[in-house]
Structure formats: structure tokens, C-alpha cells
Image (cartoon, rainbow, N blue to C red; front, side):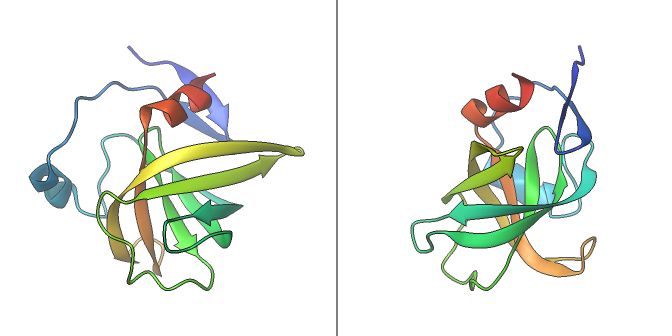
Length: 129
């Protein structure tokens, strides 16, 4: 069953998944996702336990998550499964997404240092309205 919706100017395909183990996440690596990704560049503010009100850009999005390229913050304090909150402003309305860190490092696809973030269920509900 697939349902299409649009956010950030890209179609999002709804999917259902069961939880993934750390081993499976390692196997997925940074160049693979469970669902199709769409390139975009969207400015956001992100928050982490160690970093508040940081600027960044979403470089791609899928129904399962995003690749976030931070602007300015060092990533050495961000660990697997840390919580990261993303605030996206669209047409003067803020959308807040809860995510979990799935990897931190250099993306060959984007030629940039950043982090792969997986949407938590509450954020998937926002995406699909």
C-alpha cells in the first residue's frame, strides 16, 4: 500500500516498517534507505542536547528520514540514537520534526559532512497529515 503526499516540494511515499536493529542500520550505511529519497535544499534550525538553535540544510528527504548538513556546529558530540529536533518554516508556519541519529559522517552523495536522521513516528504523522 502506497500513499503519496507532498512536503518540501518532493513527493513522499508512505511506508510501514518494523524497528531496525543497530546491526541492520550499519548494513544500510549512508547510501541506502528503506524508501526512495528526493534531493532538496531546505534551511532549518536544529536542536540537540549539545547544540541549540543551530542552522542547517536538509539535502535530501524520504519517508523514513533526512540527510542534514549542519552549518557551523561540530558533530563530534553527536552519537547514534541521539535525539535531534528539526524546525522547518514553510509559508510562515513552523513544522517540528523529532528524529533519531542513524549515522554521522561524510556523505559521498552530497559531498558533505552531516548526519542521517530517521523520523520518529510522531514526525511521520506530520508528514502524512
